[in-house]
Image 1: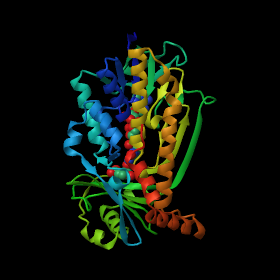
Image 2: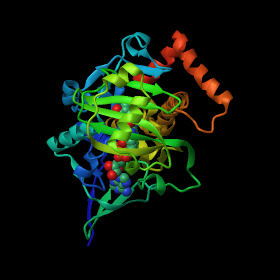
Image 3: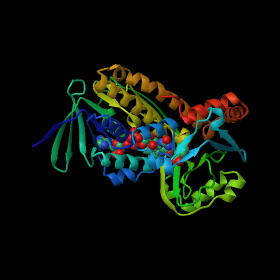
Image 4: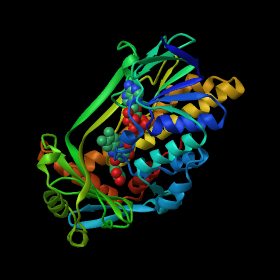
Amino acid sequence: MTQSRKTKVGIIGGGPSGLLLSQLLDLKGIDNVVLEKHSRDYVLGRIRAGVLEHGFAALMREAQCGERMDREGEIHEGFFIAHDGVKDRVDLHKHTGGNSVMVYGQTELTRDLYEARDKMGGEVIHEALDVTPHDLTSDAPWLTYRLGDDQYRIDCDYIVGADGFHGVSRKSIPKEVLTEYEKVYPFGWLGVLSRTKPVSPELIYAKTERGFALCSLRSQVLSRYYIQVPLTDRVEDWSDEAFWAELKARLPQDVAEALITGPSIEKSIAPLRSFVAEPMRYGNLFLAGDAAHIVPPTGARGLNSAASDIYYLYHALMDHYLKGDDAGLESYSEKALARVWKAQRFSWWMTSMLHSFPENSTYDRRLQQTELEYLMSSEAAMTSLAENYVGLPF
Ligand code: FAS
Ligand code: PHB
């Protein structure tokens, strides 16, 4: 026997996109339900992004979820690009008229969102299996799912697909409607989390002949490091010792000598891809976050692109329910994609400039070096990098 109920907005996916939208809508009295296929511990066990645009940080505060972020997160006014044995600083503050980024891990941000949903009695249903959207082009779309052997139905006004790249929502849009754009890079990132003091107070992006490396952090006692690895590598091929040795080999000598190593508490390889699905709306289904687009993490745009989708969708749904104005819903896909593609461009540009591409010709390699030299020599180029990194306007 299927148990039925009604809500205004059915949200598929209890990651940062789905939770942030759920919290923002609830604060405006707009009833919604989140269906998440995994347990909360599983979702919180994933180590992902670390840098928030200032607009995302502001949205977390608007969602009444910014208190721990402001207490434990770090405001960064710049970062370094290491190349040819030296470090050049990108002064975000100077090149954006005072803007900065918030360094605060996605895991903690997701934890804050879960706790805020709990505090408001928000409905996040975990281990919801076989979530399936129905009648998306009707005025009465609905969702089905099961908990164990019990079947459920939720009748909605709107459905939001915030279920990530491998979710069900994008796949529910007919292939003839969807246009998918994809670029797969010939390498991945091997990431390590360690309970060690970060080697640098600000992030270091390193370009070397051996490959890219990134020194990041989660706090002053939790470091996050990455090195570019071939797609054929498996995480079990990399001992901690081998990882630390390779990271040191890709850092300027003074940084390598200062690096504090320790046991990895998380180690994983993420492939790099650029992906966009258009449109981000089908009938009364709206895609948001990784369900619609993916970027290589070089530009720290993944999570931040999800945030701008949520900003647009939140305002559109608020205008619909509180003012009877559907302009935001009608323009959502076009508006979200305009900003998504700018994040795609920036992520592709940072990735192309800083990674080693085995198949590159000598001309390509020399052009890549020139890109970096031009950046370091041009106020205009540095301003362009900085305005993208802190986040273009919503
Ligand atoms: P998410 O994938 O985070 O969340 C989707 C949720 O939907 C998941 O909890 C999933 O369990 C659930 N779901 C999926 N299918 C479902 C179904 N059928 N029914 C119900 N629920 C379903 N971004 C950066 O900026 N910097 C980084 O360093 C970085 N590193 C990353 C590393 C990895 C391995 C990955 C995969 C991504 C990384 N990203 C990074 C991008 C990442 O942070 C995403 O942009 C962010 O998680 C997007 O959030 P959501 O859109 O909520 O998608
Ligand atoms: C991270 O800390 O995980 C991180 C930071 C910046 C990036 C990518 C990942 O560009």
